[in-house]
Length: 123
View 1 (cartoon, rainbow, N blue to C red):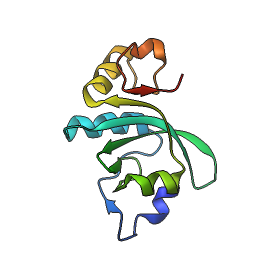
View 2: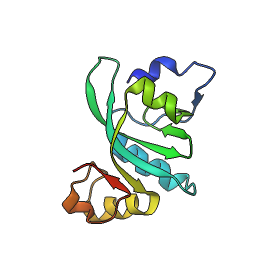
View 3: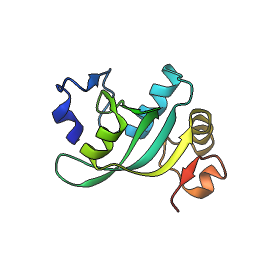
View 4: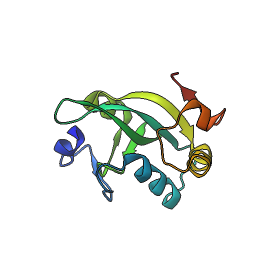
């Protein structure tokens, strides 16, 4: 992922890095271990270091993004700019956990799987 290349930047905090290729599961694992009030789970797309658009998941808390798969915490505006992130859906922490249990997977979820358990969706 492109974000890996800037992890040594002074404006990027490194956090425990989770497993590559499992971003949806990684986000669920992170929020399960680090419950933070007002955290929002985002499913969307980013541009990776090979300049390909890929499905991805990250967490927003206020004006910061936590990306457990990349192992970084940084300013949301900067994260969106660097990764060319686009949100397809946003979920509260509790809706994320309920959706994961009910669907049997970490996402991304279809509208049928989540019903009205979301904050924002592009469908």
